[in-house]
Length: 226
Image (cartoon, rainbow, N blue to C red):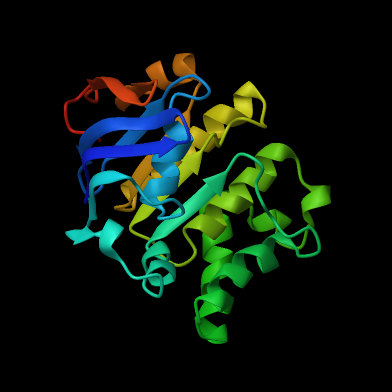
């Protein structure tokens, strides 16, 4: 599914990724952990093709994404659902409309949108808040809407960047369990976080990065990333 081969990325005099190599299988759940500035965000950006690498190769589903034309990049990004720490919901749209908007942009037929949005909100336990605006939702509720939006167009990969950074500990657990549920739908899930204690409690694969290098790659407790 995802393969990094000797990936290097530099910013001025800072090496953000230093010969990084790893692979993530289809349907795997992986935590990427490390302190601030370790290289986690850069790893996400090069995977999204928001940044170009200086050397190495990145393959997703057998395609070298570093060789994609600029025209092909938006199409490629539709295969990835992003969840951000700051939610990035439209403040003037309801929970329903935020999820529906992602589908409209992708050209989904209105009939299909009307059918799928309630199902998506039900998946993240937000069907009763469909008509609420973001300012009427708690941090955890906003993040659940963001999760629904991330899976709206049935992407192969979900990347959650510090998804529990703006929610309380109880809601953090809820968000992580929802991500595990999404993984059970056959998605590849990558969770970028610095919350090591929480990560350790889930028994999933953990890639640790420090100063741009992978310093450990611990397999899931059951050895399968399940």
